Image (tube, rainbow, N blue to C red; front, top):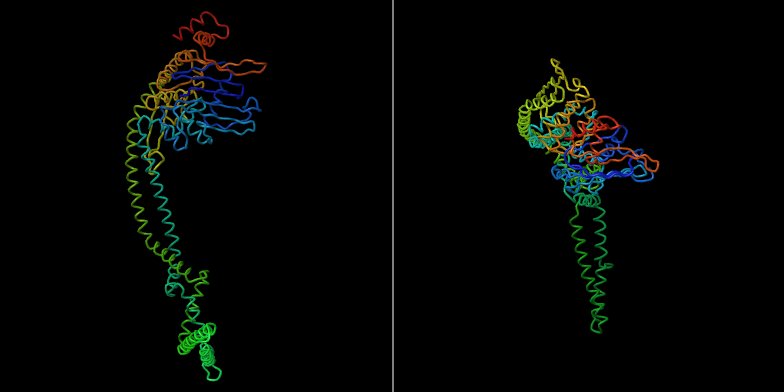
Length: 550
């Protein structure tokens, strides 16, 4: 419920602070006194877009702040979804800055308009005659029926199931598209994979083959150079080994003359050993070398295959070719396994679809069961509101597709006159009839679910006499279970309120301002008397007002 409202620097309001109680709250005032300004301020709390032209003094900030007691509204899940701190006394604040920008806060946490609207819809319902078109909206009509049918849990289960169903359908469509694309690419991928398989790729092979190719391709030159090197080392006249051996023999005679001579001798001895080892390796290499045209051709062919594959796949190493081969292998394998995956996904969809149909059927059955009771209640209430011949017919037609709230297609048929043909609600009811119908529906709903605070904005327009009294009784009855505001021009309705506020204008320092005042019992008598007989209050009007209040 709305417990407190503060408005600063908005339209004709300089500063207004007011507290509200539960029950039925009456708001009255002359035409043009500023009741619409009050509603405009509240609309900002609900997430309406801000307009700088609504600011009273454009050099100052405009603030509208409302406090709501939400303990009974089960709003913790919504606060969690919106990532907001939950408080049983929640404060919503809207600011319009001199720059024209606006800001919104819920419990001092900045929020965007979407979050503000999501919460505002659960806290305050401002209902005026032009909003009766909501009655002709399928979603709203389903909300009415489902509230009475107590379908909330079933609808939540259905919604979760529908989410899973749509997700599985999306996955299936993705798999089917993958299969279509994969079939187009499969032959080419298989061809590429076979090429790479046939190449028998080995990591590091390219470098080894290139080395072998250079050796085989230059075998004669290598043998010649190795032979010449061997001769330079072992030739009897000029051989390095021969001469170094002689050096060693000479130094051996000096080794005993001192450490410095022995050191030289040892180094020459080591060099000679190393040269002997080199000579042996040169001889081995020379003996191993043989011209092998067949092997040379095989190595050259394998190198061409590898280079062609690297050029084809735009890579620089055999390792990258191996990675491509593994990826192609995976793609081919996935393509071959897609049929099994698709079949499995189709089976999952059938399971979810079966469960969805079961839940949808329960929702449908509950709706069908409650419809006669809803029709009876609405027709009874409308009868008391001066529409004794009002008739309803509510039809549920099955749908072949899963809709957002089940598998029913809904049609509200209505006739206001005796013997009149039942027709679609939006075509059959006038504005005034829709207003009374909306009041009847809200009255019925208040018995089955916790409705937000509702504010009726001159819903009684065009109504008078006994009907207005009945209308007041309905609102009074609703207010026992929820907070109800009504802006009215009818004294019969004004007299039914638990509290009574008057909107009026006054001039302060030659500036017109709108004020909102809670009326004391005596002031309330005068206000209702003026509503009965005009500004000049007569004694009879005062007595009549007292009678209405009693």
